[in-house]
Length: 224
Image (cartoon, rainbow, N blue to C red; front, side):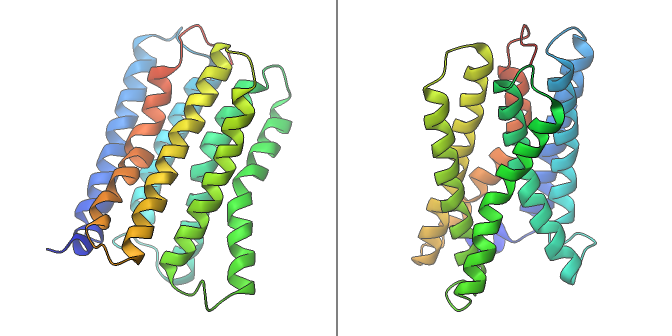
């Protein structure tokens, strides 16, 4: 099997990524049930919702899922936006303790659409350049890298409270994730086929690690 065929196979998605997502959900449920007083209601709810969401993502956006055509494309775009939303929602909540939930949600959704709107504009203005799907992926990854880098710089200037520390760690996680995706896609476009295997690493971080990692890293005294 070639690296590309391994990447495109059911072994990677939905089996590996969906399985890791399910394992993360089991960890989240066990952690919450094991200590009901740990963490805040928001963090507990956030972890469960996004652990379930990522399993649906792994199944529905795979080529082996039930969706086809325009519906599959719409679902893929929605899940990409949702993937960023889970980080922005967490970060906005952590640094905006005491603010109204509606305002936090609105800001989080707005941030989540930035990269997608840039890509939508670019594909309309330069359809030939962004005809290949890999070019679209790379543009999204580069824009997201810049966006999360700006967030990192913003958080680096704030105090070292547990909330800010966790928010900064979450943003750093996404920086690493997008850097790995972008680096892999640059290598793929340069003809390095082995980069398809490397690209599985950020996929694993995205589907199987992030939510459980946040819950494990969050101090149990955190009340955001």
